[in-house]
Image (cartoon, rainbow, N blue to C red):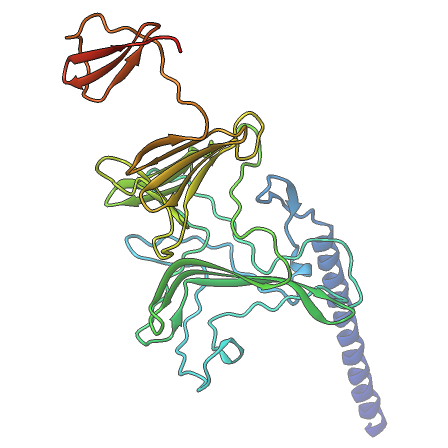
Length: 359
């Protein structure tokens, strides 16, 4: 009887082990089948921001990635977001970007950064927004930065640079700050473009990417709704006045004027060159003495006007014209001549003449 009980007990244990192993095998096979089915499912086709077809990641490809959504934002008359980062920063005790406390940090490097990786674009942040609500606003990135202290403040600051992988030095670098409020130094600037490294080409370049696209105004400054200064798409400059070094256009805003000269230099001799007929300085008008204007031409002509009168290096020519009568309209000092007489207007509308003779 004792031997029979032992055999029965061992048989029960053996049967339990066999059933457990069979259950584990069945579960493993079901798991493999489910994984195979998941891998076999075709990823959904979507469109990227360029309109090109791309595939969503399958759940098996999500390892190591942060996935938020898909979510439905159904909040009414209040803000809501698919993901939020909320934090309270106490300050590191040392000012500067190297010790900054940030709400979110993206640190992304291409594999084999120093030795060379495969061809392909790498972006730290990609934002895709689509809006179709009537009279509804939209923004790819909305930034609101505020400072109660006296430190430097900018809505955005970003930098781009090129590094020499052999020498490990920066060869070209640009830093851009937008919405700059530097209360300590009294600088309040819309945007600052800094050349950090290398001989860079252009600070700001405004262009069109296709022949059918154009700008009506490349630059426009409005003050109280009125256009003060504009540069249109054809390069025409319109403004109230223009000052270029020692040249000021429309210095007299009531009558209009062109002012030339350096008032800070007492010995300056301002001049205007006319480069006509393919000749450099074909005609030069120069203020070469106090109260004096001299006009020189490339062909040797010279005319000088000062308090003593009008002078020329060569002969003075008068157009031949005969006044109809001694009471013909004229201005005192006006001179006329013909083949027989020289005429001088001695008073308003009063001519006198003197006969000419051969010698």
